[in-house]
Length: 380
Image 1: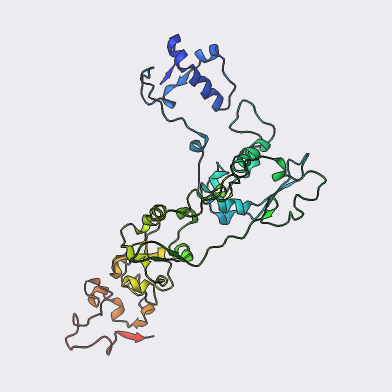
Image 2: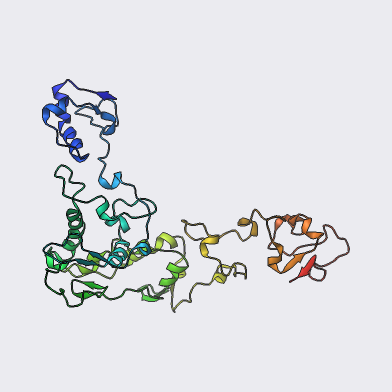
């Protein structure tokens, strides 16, 4: 709906919005007279056809993060470190530990914490969009210097409550801030300890019937595909490193259960709690020991990706519904079918396609033969 309003009251009502739209979109700020003559598409901001002062029916104001396209990127894509040297003037190059920052951001908003425009396939460098001089009429796309500082200062301010230049910058002519700028884990002169995933941890709780909880940390990552952020939400740098207040590293019982119940909400307490350490996960405990055909498979090869891992139908056709004599290489089970049996339907031997049951020969043979003693082919 394209309109030019001639009603001064209506124009006055929406004039701040008109000015804001022109400002956010990167064009020059409109004067009041210019705004009155402007053709606008009201549907871009309003959900109804006739907005009024009593019922503005405004859409949520689109922010930069809503407008940009986001793709999922992983920490493994990040370079270990970067040397930021394009803007060298009063200070020397900044050695930026990219991988360490990426791993910490993975516990919050991920790559989008800094890279608010990350399309599929690649993460463009900051200078691709933020280059040259700043445009005063477009604050959402500052110069490269402004973009760097805007992204870094907010976290550093939360962490140290200081934005001193020397935290990141080495004055020209000085060798280094700490004498060890080549250390890839160096953060403002303090080597950060290498953070590794523990294999397991044992927690002691006030639950009398099962005071011990054995948590296999790497198992949840390697087998069940959990990410750090799935459990450690909002635990970024400031969670431990706010220099004006101590970190609260221990969680309450309610907070711990809130994290675990996402997967274990329907399980009994004894699933995690015991009076002694529990052994690591074994598929046999589920009632289905893995055969040699499934032992090397990834968990998600059988359990759907993106869903909580739960028990599956034990029947083979629950996963292998498409098996037939053309698609299944029978030799993988150790029996090469002969020329007669390789042409018949699977259900002729495996009644009702119950492949998990012992095959029968009585459908074709009435001599009481046993498939083990009289195999329909050659054992290999």
